[in-house]
Amino acid sequence: MSSRPWLPRRHYFEVADQSWFPQTLREKVQDYLTLGWINRFPVIQSIAPATLVSQVLSKVLGSRVSDYVYFDFASGAGGPTPYIEKHLNDQLHREGKEDVKFVLTDINPHVQAWEAIAKKSLNISYIEQSVDATNAPSAETLLRNVPGVKDKKIMRMFSLSFHHFDDDLAARVLQNAVETSDGFW
Image (cartoon, rainbow, N blue to C red; front, side, top):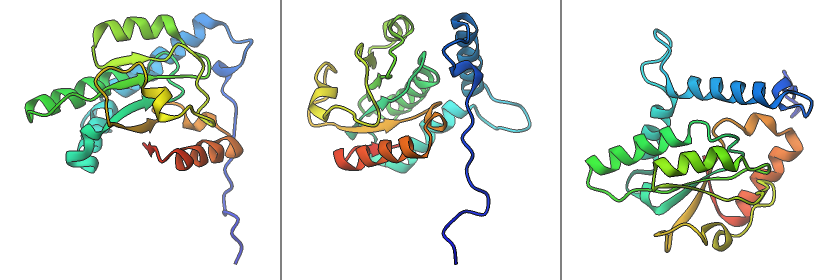
């Protein structure tokens, strides 16, 4: 029996990812993708995807949800991360548990957008320098400027981005997560 899939994965490019695509239109595409995460589509969804992610994180990790700092790799303009953070931390507050921190990263940092996001929440920060998800810095380096995270582990998130990696890059991202013993979401 062959190990090749019956329907092999095809990796297509997205027009908005191309260097020639106008930046203002790229930002609008990012905005609409974010809207898809933070709004519920009636009939199809009972809750918004960002809310669902926070609920699943809490359910799957249980009491360990606060053991992690959540690093959104390939964050773009920030996407659903602020909404996931808000929903998850609201739930933790209701349960009398400590807040969790989120950090935005990207190989091409979108610092201006991240500054605006970080101003709205003490639990969201960002790394201004380029972060390559296939060769991420050590936990010590990543956590260096995140306050109040002593003895925390890293959970990698790829909210709107993993489909951008072709098979080789995706394998390198996963291999790097294994090598660093980071969680992967």
